[in-house]
Image (cartoon, rainbow, N blue to C red; front, side, top):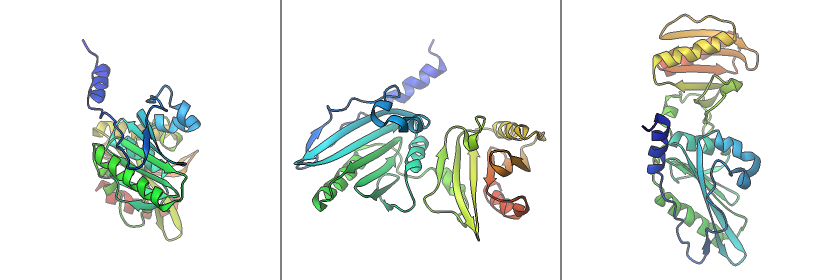
Amino acid sequence: MLTGTLLCFISIFSVAQEIVFPELDGFKKNTDKYPVYSPENLWDFINGAADGYLALGFMDLHVAEYKKGKAVIKAEIYHHSSHTMAFGIYAAERSPSYRFVNLGAQGYVTGGVINFFKGPYYVKIRTYSEKPKILQSEESLARMITSMLTGEEVMPPVLSEFPAEGRKVNEETFINESVLGHQFLNKAFKASFVTGSDNFSIYLFDYKTPQEAFRSAEEYLASAKIEANQSDAGKYIFTDGYNGTIFLSWKDKKMVVITGLAKDQADIADKYTSAILE
């Protein structure tokens, strides 16, 4: 009998899209220079950066080079385990100062680099040429790859649950493991906010059941030597030795953690927590 893990493995790979890079007019395409990278050998391609990709469900990488004279355009398609994971690695490498473009769910252009994500794919395209025609060809390639890939062309829906007031645009991220440095905290969306001269962060955890939300809150509180009252909702303020003052709240299947505010700023924390949980 197949185990649940093996069934999941088969399910994931049965729907994986075959990657066939498009032709680019005037360029010679080469896909033989690089192997298809897996979690076992990703370090061979991106060295120390591999850990960040592996922490976000990296599955495989396809690479192609396009050459025209001395100009080279390199395209990399990273396949991750889900749309959320692809967003996570994309968001980890973007900056709000980049020029954002309509590619996939979201993309940006900066200094010969075009990066975007769509469904479970994170695409990185780069050229060192500054010639306008080469840059135009690079943009054409990006559009063709976008059309070729399957998957959602939307941002993760959870992001819409963060309040718009004071939220820093294009700074949202997803952390899959060890949120705030704690091994027992996983899978959180993070958004950064500013109100007056205060900058703070909100972490939103979306669990499958209210019991999971309570267990996570209970474990975090226990780390601060606080006993949580068994309930489908709760609100606490405490000090985390690594992260300072923590505002922790949960209700039903969601848990919210706010950092960066002082204990006497509970009114601000309550305002944002209520907007998410109520």
